[in-house]
Image 1 (cartoon, rainbow, N blue to C red):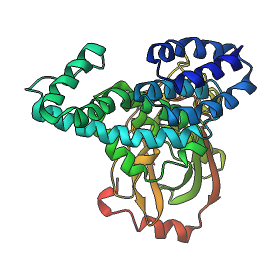
Image 2: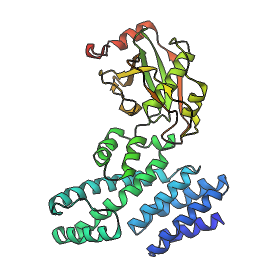
Image 3: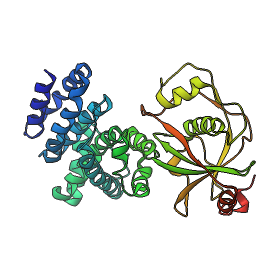
Image 4: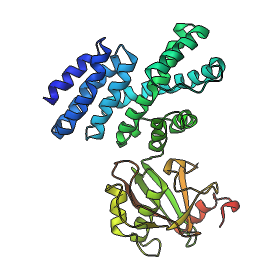
Length: 341
């Protein structure tokens, strides 16, 4: 049954019947929840080219969120990632242009809601100033960008999709100014903070360090706990290892756990001396000489948080190599005096 629904939805995406295509989304996702896991990836692969070729922009964007839901249920994004990132980039550019036009010609009105009534009003207002050919793509970008953002977040649950991002800083620069324009943009900002790479970690009190591989870590609450577990477990840092239940929750879930609060382990800074807030993520750690350098000091005060992940992604923090004393001293030379605690 699910396979037939996917085939039918594929046809609707490529058609001109907007209402039928939109009406098919919820039943498709519901059927996916009951479908065998091995059918999800072929479904995403089948839908991806149709989404890329859809003649109606809103149908394409909505279908992308449906395909993203299949990814979140366990499918691999495969070819969907490239299509979603391409369309997302265009939609973000168009959204910025829409906001500029609205500030110029909106008569002081608040940005429109993404309801049919407000979209119709915005189209008419901007078309009167810019002409329909210029106005309609801008309004469509404003309307559709959150859908592409949600689809991108689903794809970015997978390391192979994150590897296709390219210039992560450029993506962040595009999305950050839009953080309050739709909840989907805030989710995307958080997903862009996930990196799959080695950190150069320096424990300043003991002047010891290690190359640590991280993957699937979305914020520094998660990073700090998993890092304490890895470093203490490797004998690099002395102290009490975090509770195994906390570590498991940060690695695999469950999320929204009722476990007691996690204790703070370190004060985090990067090589520029900037404090790494726990609400920030690994991608916010500055790159110096080709490496993200994370400096650990003793916790300045007691902080607590509940264990759990921002995204349902398996997280990994692994000590790959303990640095020699000479290496540690050389890397600490990159840390400015103002960063000293």
